[in-house]
Amino acid sequence: MAMHKEKRKLIYSDQQLFDIIADVERYPEFLPLWQEVHVSKLPQTTSEHYCYSTFQTIQLGPVKKRFSTKTHLYPFKRIHIQSSDPLFQTFNMNWLFTPNNNNQSAIEFSLNCVAASLFLRPVFDVALLQMAQIILSAFENRARFIYGK
Image 1 (cartoon, rainbow, N blue to C red):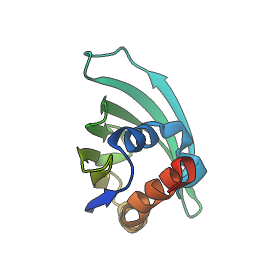
Image 2: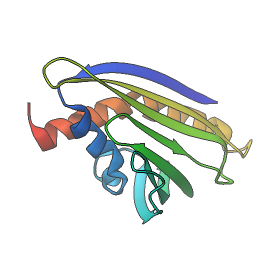
Image 3: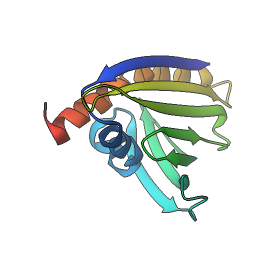
Image 4: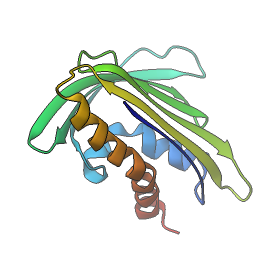
């Protein structure tokens, strides 16, 4: 089981970080493992919440796997990503944004993932835990690339 939780204070606003994390189609440009992402929009649920579905392809060594996710966005506050794809027994990724002083943000990232296949589980556990440990830094680097500082 891959479980990871991390908090960090960043010099970017909640909106800047939210926009980068919500732009899942750009993930292959800067996130290791992500090869392809295709987004289909879903109807807006409420004025404070909207969601979209994705098909994503990740590559773990020689193995490429495609899976679907559903992303729930609560602008500038929270992003929740879940998958009921047969590839996973469990897949939940959460981002929480807390405004800080001087247009900065405290961000909390968590990942809970279990592969459905007992054969793939050890590979997923190692790869996704390694990925989870660098994912927040990858988004911070992306923010630096887009917004400077």
